[in-house]
Amino acid sequence: MRIVFAGLGVMGAPMAGHLLKAGFEVVGFNRSIDKAMAWGELHRAAFATDFEEAVENAEVLVLCVGRDDDVRDLVTRASGRMAAGSLIIDHTTTSARLARELSALCISKGLHFADAPVSGGQAGAVNGALSVMVGCEEAQLARVRAVTLPYTKSLTRIGEAGAGQTAKMCNQIAIAGAVQGIAEALHFAKCADIDPELVFQAISQGAAGSWQMSNRWATMAEGRYDFGFAVDWMRKDLGIALDEARSNGAHLSVAALVDQFYSEVQAMGGQRWDTSSLHARLEARRKS
Image: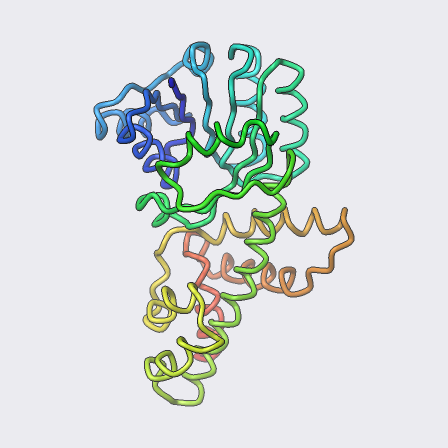
């Protein structure tokens, strides 16, 4: 199976590497040619500088890029070049509206489209342990699973086009609330002058325990915020969820509040800090 993998950033580069290790024929593509060259040199693999030429002979196009406009551009360009029956898998977090739009475009061209956003962050991509939420035709699920298996630990088809992106919104909404809760608990412990490590030992194995607590409590306590998924990207994702909520009538008061808190982190210069930097905002207030 010949795969073109477009988007060789912190997530896409290791994901494409896992496909190579699994024996797929992979051609890498990135708008910044330097990243494509670096990926090609690291893996001794082919990379393309001409996107249209690369996808002409591809059975599958996998995307892991930045924003809605990036995805729309690449899928539109690919849809006029890929052979009928080819599959496009989009791992980018986008709006559900875009996923439905691009699915309709692909159907009109005889192609198949799957919106398949991932959760697990950079570590999950590197370790091949991402969770995938998929919106696609049921008949294409086995094909999507076969391609993504090398870098995933779980894959769930949520429904038709757009359903995967909607599930990813649920994921980001849940994370936002969880991280803010942990940030406040840690901040409270420091203000109360009790040992954060002992607090963690006491509460992490009970009902308050979570992945975020187990993996970020200690680093938050040390003021370290360089663990992958950036505040700028989280705000993009929460913006997508809040926009969708205005359409479907959902009330996301906590997500909206946390989005505001992330804007304050950005104002502190934390655009590239990871999402646990909500704690930095609270500590800045404690020390002021």
